Image (cartoon, rainbow, N blue to C red; front, side, top):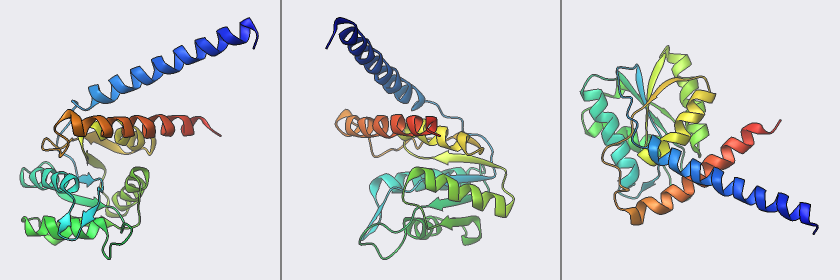
Length: 197
């Protein structure tokens, strides 16, 4: 490898590391952004279910959406998520049952059961919003997930604001660090994919 090639390689490494560092900081910073305001609907991003109901992560997202509904911030909730491997029921259906048990009327809950990833959650939720005449949304997820989720929502043309759950299951840095690393990986991958033709 010639001297010029080495310099280009080193400069590329420095730039890439710098980009990853800035991305990490932006994800962490955005985790503290709460834009909660009145909207037509809350979109709850799926997070898996178990034999006894929603996973701890998903449960806290649903709890936050229920609190938004109870406070009058939204008039309906969209639960998202298909059936994971080995599950007979979809995330969305389990979430609907949980929300109904916590006082949300069934006619205020819509579900989409065909998604397996965040982008599909939002794409399918956007279609439901169009069908039902809902124009604005609050996107509900964990704080460290919000940067990627809101980037996707904006790219889809959704009139959406972030409403991270204040009771995230990710509380300690032992749980936050792996989640942050995962979010950085998927966020960078998503942004790079957007650059491809």
